[in-house]
Length: 110
Image 1: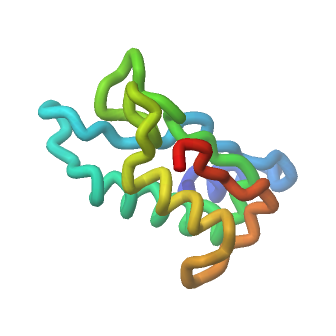
Image 2: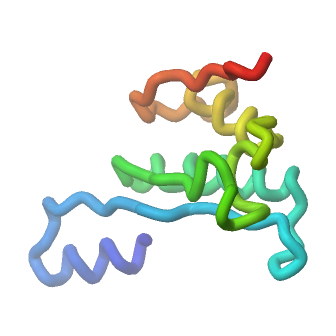
């Protein structure tokens, strides 16, 4: 993202915001990422993107129905560690505190 922004700046495009429109990791065999790693990777990316003034980052996806292993909740609507990590991040319960301006996630399953 830093290199992409630098390229845009070098060509006079300093005002266009960058958006990350698909961010996520799967926990299936292909990628061999654990649920805890997925939580850590997603939250670290969100923190890093916020530090780069990236105003929008879309997590793929809320429920990993068609793509098993993706998602913040499983096919039975049970939140995984990434859900709770993102919830804490947007509620400002982690350090450093991001300023995403998003509404806090609620856990309707509890």
